[in-house]
Length: 112
Length: 112
DNA sequence: CCGCATCCTACACGATACTG
DNA sequence: CAGTATCGTGTAGGATGCGG
Image (cartoon, rainbow over all chains, first blue to last red; front, side, top):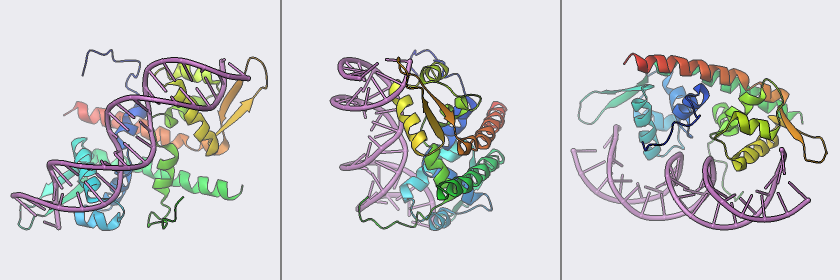
């Protein structure tokens, strides 16, 4: 937040989205949350190679950016779950296109 | 390339694509190349805040992964251009969805 | 079970300078 | 103009342990 000019980085939609979804895990988390809300332990089971630190960290930033909503049952033992927000669901077309691209890409390299 | 097991990272389409497109610049480069092939200096003008190092580096990995093709005129002074491959063009739907998402997202946060 | 705090390593990215 | 090499830094992300 210094007095740096807002360079020509002029808010670019591609950059906006890729900032929101950058990193190794966010897309996978969103994808797993799409069918139904999940508790952290369930997410961890669905994405076994994520560390708990990263899971919590990414869930937090996804909540902060509004793509995911956190529900707290306020019970003991602690029980929460996370689900996609309305805008969070709107990432699904991106993911669908990415999956479709991956299929085409793997087909492509197979034939070379 | 050590003797590490190929963990459960079991080839996931989302991961495949996001590996190919990860980083701050690849999507922007692909986007700029979509309308027409461009020379590095033209790309640099269209994406002013990329360093020349990153531009060259990203172009190289994009060529290696097959999304972009490099043409060398073999002249002096050096003259080359880069263009999307057939499979490279297939990233456009992803980018389109990302743009569309960004619009929706900015609309969303504006109303809060 | 949930989530935070520490420590540490690898790498993405930037700045700069140099070659053909 | 195209491309490479070197160096420095911030941060993503992994391992581990603690506390509510």
